[in-house]
Image 1 (cartoon, one colour):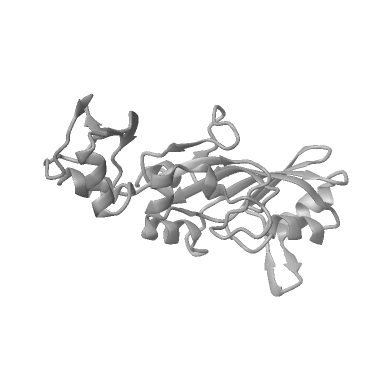
Image 2: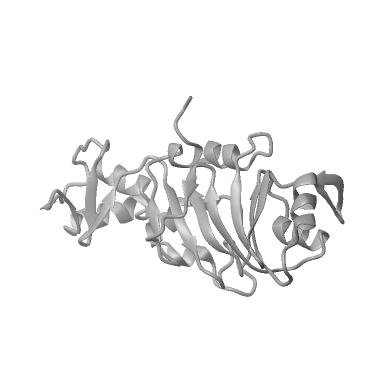
Length: 234
């Protein structure tokens, strides 16, 4: 692959802008500057740098972010800053999308990718990819509420019951709730349907992927690929 094409594929601007970065001596591989846009490189496993910042080549971008409170999962936020402002410009140019939005006051694990088939695989209700939420409630959690969440509750705009794939009380005001669907404000509405109220919500797991304990709010890191979320192929 031409070096200019590689930069373009990774979101470093238009084709002309990528050629300009290379001609200006701002691109290096293995510490050696490459000033020829037509220089041929093998992208597999390649780490290059632009302005001294290392970038691993990824044919498809796949990231995990620890979403902080006060950010919207929208390209055009209405009242709060966008989570996309927490990403570097090349990733924003690549068009990565949040997989399953979290409300502005919800924190925790957010997957972002530009892999369309993966987005479909993770969001399709037929695939039953589990998401685990840590819920803090306004009132004490009762065994009856846990039983109702497991049995299924009816939400106002949907006659079909929705149920938790798993649910357990973690303390007097805490629930760990596992869902395999992705309805609008689902956790908050389900908890309200059993007579309680969510005061804090945190997603701790998505499929096989747990939120890394050393990933601080607002930080992100690369994933190796879909297997990090879906688990190893059978």
